[in-house]
Length: 115
Image 1 (tube, rainbow, N blue to C red):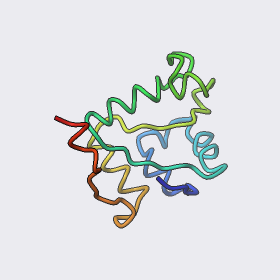
Image 2 (cartoon, helix red, strand yellow):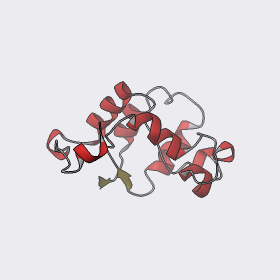
Image 3 (tube, rainbow, N blue to C red):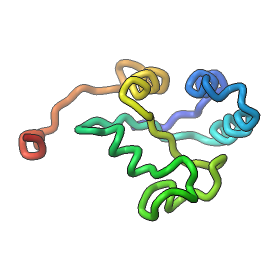
């Protein structure tokens, strides 16, 4: 986990499929308005579980108890992003983190958590 100030170039690459959408300049400006907290999550079904925790893209369709359901109102002011698949997670991790910032380690509790 780290705090980072997103740049125009980084956001244009991260959201390259949205750059030509009319709402994108406002989204990019919003994301550049302050630092963001970047995280790498790992574990069994981390992407699927993470997206359940985040809630729906439209906060009004998100269940209470999810991040978006509890802390968001407008899609354009969505306070979190979650990768939609492992392949995209790997690409996004490479965009937001340098190789030496992602540490490979095994928890001492692994055998107590996983079969």
